[in-house]
Image (cartoon, rainbow, N blue to C red; front, side, top):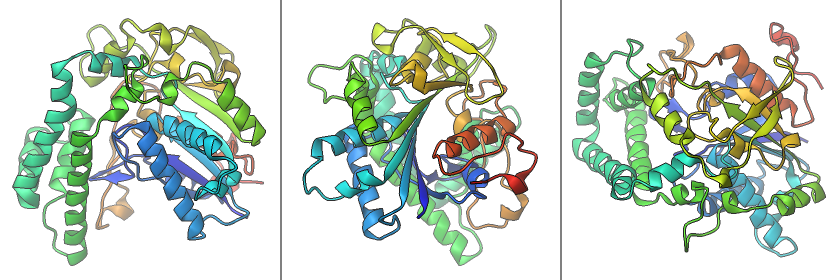
Length: 408
């Protein structure tokens, strides 16, 4: 029997894109464990219903090919909108229970589900974006379409040349925002390399980025799913379900353990600039009642004791923290971090030395640059806790002794 942990990415999600891995460093933290890691290559901005259906088919395919054995245990972890995908997946399983629908036996393998920074009742940021009217269409459709057409027209050589020019203007780690570094280093990476394998991987990265841009420019239904107020005629999203009782009862009946990890970031200073202050302000301004009321939540792990009272305006830069509390406060635990910190993007760093000669290089970024105190030790402790929740393995509090890291 094996324990499989499936990581589901959120809005805009992917496994790897250009120079960026969505879940950066998780393999290194959990690699010594006996858990089998799977990274779901999600559709970036499609509706939650569409993404959940693809997840169900993907899991069924893993079982059909016997990657997941008949006696294996399955543990689902979703970051951000990926958590809503998991909720919708379970809703779909419940509605099909007792039928002969393909892949239904996967349900019997699921043992735990964990939600990280998930907008369980939506996010005020999506509401603000949708409230922009015509500007919203420019931001969510026309800009990605323009990027797609430009990238397609310039081809690999032209995009790589443009990236090198931009890199001279904004060298990495010289004060430029890390989200900009990620875009520029991805562009540079499309350039031709000396070896055949490097050239093939560069072309594959280029076409994968084109595919991602095409998805984003043609299907942004997830934004409606993330609006805490359901639009007239829009399909129902798990974020619009007013009571968690039905879902919680189903989880309990199936003996599936669950919890939510809630993230909250420090309010940016008045003189702060950059992306984080902008998105934090949009997310915190005038939160709707649908997001939830003030809640007192305990801290995750043993590094902090007691609880913290969360207000509807508190957020991690992308999602209001009270919206992440699901299905109740007793099943939710707090981490001080921004939305990207918890998936490994809390600092800028080059690939490890042993990977510098690898055909494909992946960098670590501080995507939101929130100035949080979340670092490598906090990251390792968080993912150790996530792995421990599977119930089969325990991660030690003493991270200084990696040789004794995983015990039954």
